[in-house]
Length: 78
Image (cartoon, rainbow, N blue to C red; front, side, top):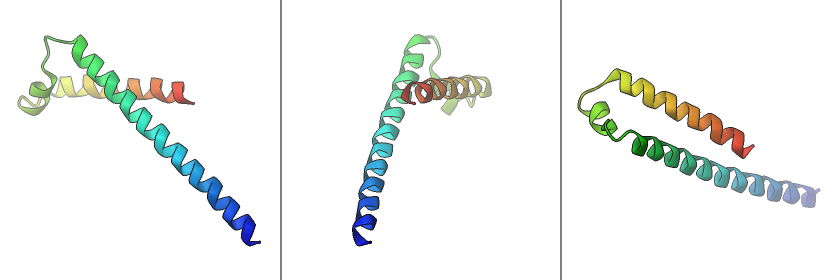
């Protein structure tokens, strides 16, 4: 009985570690994708438009890009 409980915890720990690793890789890929988008749009200073000018249109585009990247990263990792 006790051995089965320990065995289950080992599997749980491995699954938790794999989830953490995949999560960090996914976040890294999303950051890389966003930086690539920022690099591809040199005429638009995203930080200035979002922070100082409070440009809603740029915020919607950036959110759309992030969601799109998240969908691609999610599909690639599964």
